[in-house]
Length: 466
Image (cartoon, rainbow, N blue to C red; front, top):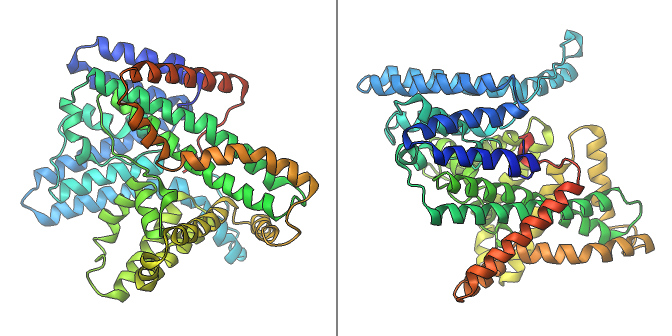
């Protein structure tokens, strides 16, 4: 079940909200936990038990770490054991097939069988989320949760379960037991949900069609190739940020406040700034639980470079068990190292438009690495696509038609990826008639998105596969 489906919007969500607000406060977490399991089980009926197992293991680990408060050795042993289980499950389901496949290539004489293990939806997200809890309890940054229903609700909360944002326990611990639902927060939740829905249905899906068309076009010309990868650059942003907005909006509807996951990343003047604005919750997780524990930037330049390399190799692999994701992470890791060593000095002095063009070009090529698979066919296809961006003529007659038809949606996506619309919204919000304008706009967006969903086939969020 996806947020942008008719079943979710017009059946599951209204039913859950109705029952939730009819129930006494003391039963709301229990009901929400049950709703979370139903939501997850809709797509993963068998592998739901894997998530429940992770919840139980880490709940027990948190309680034991708290119990042995004065015994550092035991506390560390419990933390390590829980981390081994968490990462072991993630590694088995996500990476075991990748490892055996590559071992079979390297060591063909061993006849290693390749196993196609189904990937549980959202396992990368809820594993990192659940690990942040046990680590924070170990560090004494938060207290262990004694109520297993409240803890289970935190891990399985359906608004952010499938594709984030990765919510640290200490950011919502008080909300699990004493959240204050109110009409302004609920209204803001509806606003955010509709914003995310529009990003996904009206923009991401539309530019996705442009990308599919340009990618498969024969001899369209260099301009079409550039427009195609620009379209994919917008697609992945509006798809993922749209989901994050919908998740935050749903959280608000149930009284939760999740931190922002995107902050207009495509206006960045460096790749360093880009990664402060893109998938903020993932970057925060790696900084707090990997980069800083490794020493961060406190042990000299050489160690800092090594730490960045480790973090970005892991960031790439977190996205998928494939060499292209690893190379994608290494690609950005190298750029970040170069920026820290000397490039940032030049970028700060350069005109804004120069530094923004620099960033966008590197981001675009990063998404090319991200998109194409790591098999021979994928590598050849990527090389051919890059070649088409610089050779074969500027624009063919067939390409001209495709290019002209794509310009309006790409211009709209360009504007929507900047704070311009937000600034216009803030100015309009000062008008007395603004509530009526906003309500009318929300109704129009919902009607258009619903009509689009009725006509379109199933189109899941891109980050579901991670």
